[in-house]
Image 1 (cartoon, rainbow, N blue to C red):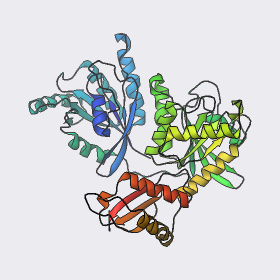
Image 2 (image 1 turned 90 degrees about the vertical axis):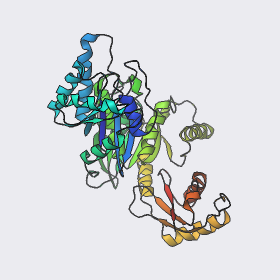
Image 3 (image 1 turned 120 degrees about the vertical axis):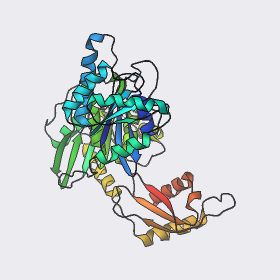
Image 4 (image 1 turned 180 degrees about the vertical axis):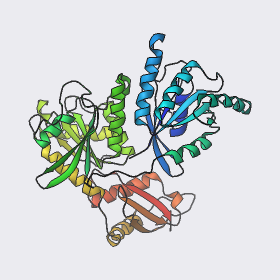
Length: 436
């Protein structure tokens, strides 16, 4: 399971800037105004071959100063409980404040791995002021300028050895299917329908499921685990810390699943939050089945309507469009077992291995007829294609004389041809050009 690094600290110390620096994105909005980060940003950082998740904890500013410490206490408690490493961000310009002391006290008691990050060291003369943060009793402070990147490499070098080994805990080594989606899409209802009992609390209140629950399914010759996750709702609406905690758990469930069943509400269609969940599934390279639930509530169900609905979903999730869509109803149990069959076939597709001879018999004539475009008068010659064994998703290597000139559009063309010839529906695919 992926390691999780949480960024904590009082307002205006540069947590979002550090998040953007570590994840190499600009997803977190940065402003001088305290309280800009109300939602919780989630992203990935890769350093020296290790990848880990980063969460930016914001939204600490409230109108009343009386509950300020209480708010910080709750937020930090959630981060402490779930994170593997905590980056405690302080401001080298303003020095140690009462709020810093307050957070440090909680972190010292936690026993978690904490790194003090003295931010805003925007010139070398400021680095000597960082010595003050030894007073927090949390070890050596690491100086950083999140704006310019000064010290970010040293900080990452320090974080990576603190991470847990990347081993995926397996339950009886059975397939794992995560049921994910927005709150109220019917995730717990469909699992209850599958296992034929009201095993889970099912209510109309969004966010009833707080934790990820593993449910073993051993019927009709099938044996696997369902992971029922808390609904992932739009982050700006996540007001309760318990729900924030459950969102982190749901993201971890996606990371630890083989195939994700993305539940979409038929009465609402694909919404922006569905796209966010889809992007998490894509980032983690998981198999995908889209289950359109509550199909019994849709008045018109002609073949034309179904086709239009399918096209709308594939259009919103493009460029990845090769995934199965099942129209079902957890309430009436319409086509729910089709979801299981399709998820199992996607799981098999993820493990599909094509013999090297078959692969080259198909690919080499295709490449000869449609070669990569010449760049700067140089022609790319692909001599051999092979599939890498024992990978998370089907991965192919193209051995070429000038691999650097094979661009993404051509790789997409080859991927589409592979998908046309072999069954890879629902699974991501990787193609890498290499020097022959």
